[in-house]
Length: 454
Image 1 (spheres, one colour):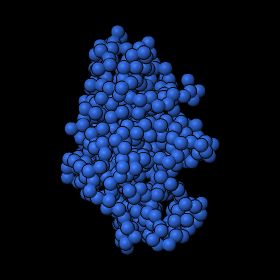
Image 2 (tube, helix red, strand yellow):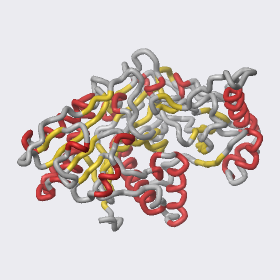
Image 3 (tube, one colour):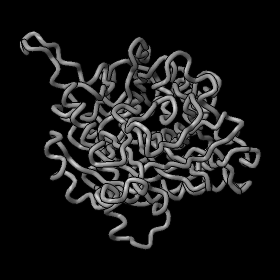
Image 4 (tube, helix red, strand yellow):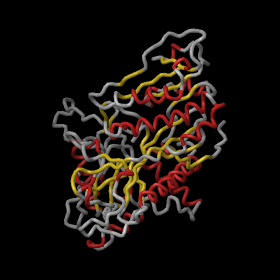
């Protein structure tokens, strides 16, 4: 859920170099992306700028002068932030330097909870965020102390067995479903941490010869061995949504919505109208009191990156292509879902996204530093329950666009065309800002505030 990652076995492509001349392009671009995304970025740029108006370079040292206008479209780890900060009027990049208030689960919850303290009558986010607690823990033996202020969770633990609710444990800095576990009692939660500790310490008798399981490979988090003795000390627990919206047309499988959000400068926020529906591979079965306190990823997790083989076949659909009702369901998962549920869901997502980013920007100013000369595309994940209510799950920076697959590649391409028109054209050709209006049908502007940062 985080900065761009190039998966194992996938090439990271970059811009070819072009000759630099004194009378050359008006701006230069360094573009690096996965093999899936790179041609879409080239296409998006070419549709907004004539070929002679920009040049492609592979390194910042190829700029004619340090003040020559520069666009960086690169993974977070590759961005030249020093140049970005030194040249606020001529340098533009596709990521904010600091945005933990949105993409780290515990910071995200702090943003939301702080906002609610000051805005108790908020309706945009309230009712759309599952009950959440956050805590820090190094070792399972200190669990009691870690949960002292987790009132909702402790209340659940004290209930009779049949009244206990299911909760989801998430390592705050993991993504792609890694480390997600299901529990309903303190004993089960403790067992999860004890299991991780055992995995982290099972290196054999000769510690000098033991090989530690890496916490990341090419930037991809691996949660499991070493979790409790690593830097991953922050966790959130959320009340599990036990009755998600299901459709027999999709074999009663659980799904979540992926919405793409564009944040520009300091601060405008847009929600891309075309969204994804990502499905788990197997039909949903609600957990019961007799279930094992683990999540079967094939039933409960909708992260397509966890699906082996050819996961995208039947797992990823356009949100707007989903059925208009579940009236054809023949099971108990049949509700009087409004025929307008998809439009209603988008409205809920738009309103919640607006409040979420304002909350992060105003309540966690240190952890979301929106720069005037930066923009970023985020992927927000939402669950829809059987009544049509939308619930925020998490937010990801520079999401894995490959989840769309080849069949929906055009959706991603159109997204980046809109991103370039709104963020890049607005920066390098501010005299054409009025032309941005024609992409309004693709992007819904949900927030426009002035954070006083230029």
